[in-house]
Image 1 (cartoon, rainbow, N blue to C red):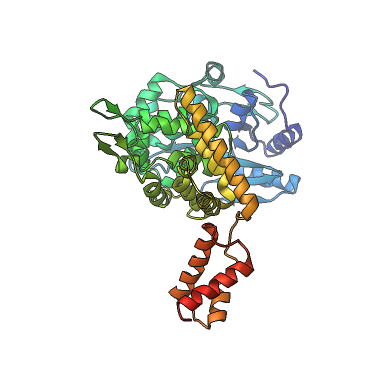
Image 2: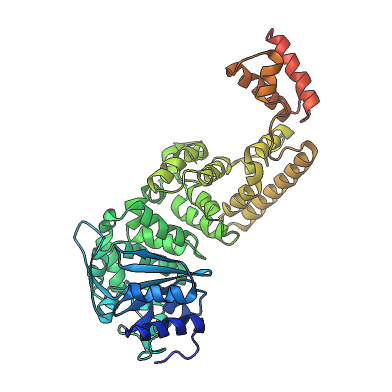
Length: 465
């Protein structure tokens, strides 16, 4: 079979010409071929040749006048070309030790190279040299698997997954991204080999996991991770959410499947991965806070507070960034119950002011999370919750417009307090600043410098400063 309408003709023609000059065979292989056949957007290109991979990369880089990065330890080279990367390797064969997913690499044939691929849909290649120009090479019938939307390994799945256990997560990632079904034999093999994932670093696992979380319907992948027990290996906190318990006809909902629904809901509204992480972790502390009372049934008091404390622990273990992204997720987990709590009667403006200040620029994302958190199948309940949130949001907009509190900073700084009272840095300065902040949020004084200064002087008099 020949591919007649190959895009990027200039680049691929140039690579083919360079291969002919070096008297070698070369092919586009892997994800680019798969995505091209699926009519999906794809950028990065993998090139495999039967010899002289680095020499080919150097010649192509020279012709394109592009930067080249050579990884001698891996026998690969990367050429940066506008928005896409072109990676060149020489065909190879791989073997593995039982306690490591790092392969022993040796030069091999094109057939060897295709056998080492993870799935049949990633083992197809398209020729670029004169001999193989535009020819589709498909030794494992990957094109049929594309049509049937099946994920299947080229070799025995037990060997494929045991050799490189990350491929089990990749299978689920592709299933989630492409909405493909994992072949039954392959799925059974993942369930059998799930403990092999322990030899894979959390950095590599989380890279695949984030791609699952960014897929159109993340619950597909999250469900598969749970069913295969892979989730148990690297994310036990999420697994503990699963299950219901009944006492005296009181049953709490299954918080695992509720969480999956919340993640799906929010994924329809945003591609912000950290907002999706907030949805994933919003109820993470419910198992630790679960209590039963004969009169009221089940409760999870304080799960939002404990969840915010657990968030950095999870981020640290999973090698996620401990920066503003973690703080953002932590904040949303902590605040996710606050908006609906403001829907009760007789809530003063102070409650709204505090939420505006605590949420800051992330208040709109907080409401997106709150709406996603509504998973009831009772239409009347859903309508009631949505109306309540809408009422709270309108009230917040009015209070914010009146008091100018978004990105709130007390109008009196610590430096000003120290200078006025001739104080050195101390807890006392922080206490005065906190009292001013509370007075503004309680509505006792306006959010402006003059009123805050006057209030500060009054505090000083009471403290004999």
